[in-house]
Image (cartoon, rainbow, N blue to C red; front, side):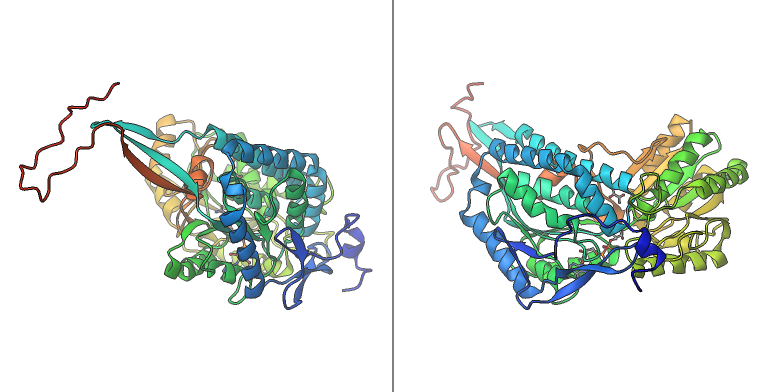
Length: 521
Ligand SMILES: NC(=O)C1=CN([C@@H]2O[C@H](COP(=O)(O)OP(=O)(O)OC[C@H]3O[C@@H](n4cnc5c(N)ncnc54)[C@H](O)[C@@H]3O)[C@@H](O)[C@H]2O)C=CC1
Ligand SMILES: O=C(O)/C=C/C=C(\O)C(=O)O
């Protein structure tokens, strides 16, 4: 593709792009040991705009060795939570102060609309600030026990955490893991998604400026497959923890590869979440929220409400109004502040989403979109696409598309709505629209989803857990669940008074412990 194409002319290339993207190991930017690189492309022109270092086992070995040394010998795990918290707050301040630049780079690299990329950059700062506060507020359990014992929980950082992240909102999802892993005193090796390495290349500067000690944060770019960076991180014996966000089938592979090492695993995986609209719902609110729920972040969002189930009494009205609104969603260049849906991340992903759009034309009734939008002859642009009357066994009802494509299906009764909602291998999120309080809560109790939003948009307080059930994940991140994942909780039992030893082997009667040394409470 030449530079004269419409897309190449329309794209906005940020000033002062780095010359190339390197790894960052033990406080230094470095190339791959074998010198290998890969092309990084922008999704508007699909042209390579730079090269990134392609990490393999040797690079992961170097990064893990640096992180292990920083853990075994460095100050980070030994600092008081308050001291680490100060550095994390500084990181949050720096991220906030660079939000516009971060958004510009993220939007250019990933195709996310600039206004949404800005929101995600601010959410990344919030993640650091939240864990900076949480680690100081953390109260560990202490119990007074009969026999003048005290039992308490000693939380300890675990070691080198391997963090493997996807491309849909890269910087923010990296912060999701970096915040708690660092707050709790671990050291890390981050392996960002190969489609979108640009924003991650800003972490080293941010961390250095905030005063994070050398070796605590390490970054290895590259692919996930066997022998490459992701796989090598999972199989490294000195990495006891892997926190992974990505596709369910990648999660299964990582699970298997980590099994021989019995590693701690946190898995945030795919989704095909239902949005259930009952006839008594506030339809205006339900339509606005379900439009946002599947078309924001270009539809490349794990919690997308990509199956909308609508009660038959309002089905025709809903479909008509929904399609009309979907047609008004503004597709545009990612850097344009009025854009609501930008360009999908990569031509491979674009081809996948387009293949589902074509399949949908056989499996459902196309009522909006259906392919490349007018005015965008190149680049990874897909018009917001709506299929109605989709049967529950259709592939577009069952499979995660991860793009701006939604399937709408009618139902009659509450029982049918629940059965349809649960009729998928995934269980990440569910959204329910009804004005009947009992119905809403009963549905929430029964639906197979890690997160449920009732008459509500996808907004999560950082104290609540994020995670899925079934093929959508294993474990939860967020709030104290993240602190639990990134720490060992050692139970310590101590006797303060007289020790009541059992009399085994002394030919005496074996008696119950006597409380002759009363607890002074
Ligand atoms: N549940 C959640 O919290 C979220 C889940 N996701 C899911 O992420 C997916 C989209 O992201 P993708 O980047 O396409 O996922 P992916 O699974 O293809 O890749 C994710 C990361 O894993 C690495 N990887 C691939 N194979 C690996 C292996 N064998 N060993 C170690 N690492 C490996 C990749 O290089 C990348 O960094 C969607 O399924 C989406 O639902 C996205 C955001 C949030
Ligand atoms: O920060 C959160 O609470 C949610 C993030 C959600 C996504 O990244 C997603 O839905 O893809």
